[in-house]
Image (cartoon, rainbow, N blue to C red):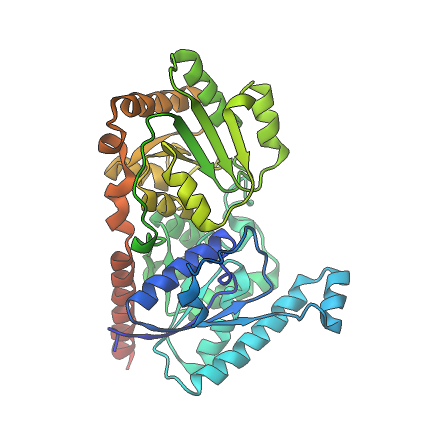
Length: 416
């Protein structure tokens, strides 16, 4: 029955949730668990951890459904050899082989209705590709970002026309051809991906990252301090133009309350250099990496939350932190390409202001608008992002999956 489907998921970056892709996947799993679905997840225990893991029981429900496999045991001969040789591909091959063995063992006990797989990293689809061929179980492949990374737009990759090694092109072709369905977090990403993998176009849907009710917090509006907060990495999304906009705002505004700009996460020297050059050091607080819950709490206690996107011609990405922000209800300042996903959403539904990432003046004007409403105590009324929550709620996401399950079943029946 599609009401309570039985799912086998391959998701290398999943548990523990110590990176953005792992958080996205873990939140989706919580939504599926709450919907009463049976799920088994095959994850990779030795992937990179980018920030601390919660020890407060937040993710305990996921522990029960995770089969966490190490590609190579650290203290084994293979582990030592791979460390010396720097060959991550060997670890990948070992993980895929072990994942398939685990999938065979699990499927001997449970009749799964669907296979799901996630492609960050790109080899996440490989065990699903093989196992779906063996088992004939319908398979849904998710793409959170353009894959392979070489095909990502500048500055992340070389664009859709980038040449790939033959083996990688063949792998991608096989995934696109053999998956029953493909999902993307945004329509712009789906169109971009389809421009070089056209076969997925007529068997794909948009399923955004999920905002969870259990992570919602009460919006705060401190009358004592006006603050902007940017959580997460700034890699290829330099902070200079944003900080230039903040300085311009300060030059044009008579402030009679403290003003703070908070950054949370791993940061390069770019941030320090920019704050020194613009003489904003006294206003900027730079904190290291935090647990997901800690980050959410800091965000909930900030006046405005900031997303800085890279200098892409088109904003095809749907940053997962956007739905994390919705859980706090705080207004959002999206510093984005003029044409893009976040601009589309905010223009249509509100919840903040989207501005041209190349314009310090536009950034300064946006901060001023937020500040005027904050002073009047009408910031939530005018810009609260809570109004977007239902668009990305677990109810919406679960319903979209159920629609896809029905579509796949009907296509199978037509083929028969």
